Length: 313
Picture 1 (spheres, helix red, strand yellow):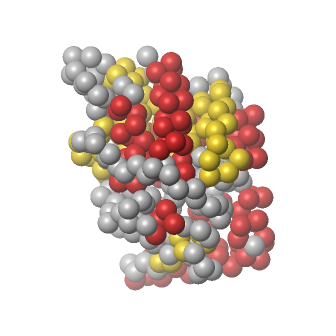
Picture 2 (cartoon, rainbow, N blue to C red):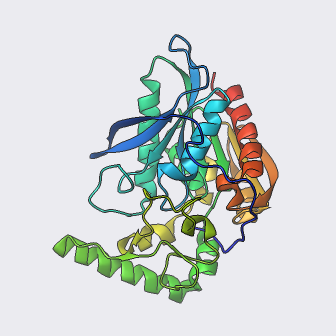
C-alpha cells in the first residue's frame, strides 16, 4: 500500500525493456507460482550466476515493476525471477486478488528453491519493491538460508502507519468487519467481493491518492494487471507488520530508499533493527519513480546489483 505521493515524470522503462524472459512455474504450498526468468546478458549455461527472486508492489503482477527490475538485474549479470504471487496473475489460487503476507513469503521461498535446483546458479537472494520489501523480510525471517536481501522504495508497515492511513481504531475496525463478512460470504458461497486496489478519489479503495502509475497503460496499467483487492483481505492487510520482522533478518540486507518514498522513517527503523550485515542507500526521487523511471531505477539497480554480486557468490 502507498501513501499519496506524487510522480515525477522522466524516461519511462517498460518490462521487459529488451530482455526476453522465460516463463517458468513451480509448486508453492497447495498450488503453483508462475514467473518470468531473466537470464544474464551473455548467458553461458556452463557458468554459475547469482540469482534473485523479485516481488513487486501491493496487488502487482510480474509484468510491472518486478519485470523491470528483472531486466535490469540481467543486464548487470544477475539471473532474476519476477513472480506472480499465488492468487495473482498467472499463478494458481481460487481466492483471486487475496493479500496474505505469509503466503507471499512462502512463494518467495519457493522461488528460491526453484533457483537453487538450477546448475547455473551460485547463490540466491530476494529483492522486494514497495510492499514486497516487507514480504522479503517475512521470508528472510522465516528462512535464515536466504543468501541476501535488497529492498527498493519499501512500504514498511507497522500499526502506527496503518492507523494513520485507515483512520485509527474506528476505521481499522470497520474495514476488518467488512473483511470478516466477505470471508463468511466466500466460505458459504464461494463468491469473492472486490474493491479497487487503487483509485484517485474513491474512499472505498484500498489505496487512495495520486495513482498515475497504475492508471496509465504505458506504465503500470498493463493488460495483465487487475485493479482489485479481495475485501476479505482486510485483516491481513491491516495486521501486516514488516517492521517487526527486521530484527529476525540475519541475511546481508541493502535498503534503498528516499525522502520521497513511502514512510522514510520506517525504512530507517527497519535498517536500524536488522540483525545481520546491512547497508542503507539514500537515493532521490518520489516513490513511483522507483517503479519505472530511468534515473531512479538505474540508480537503484546499480546499488542492488553491486550488493548481490558481493554477497551471492
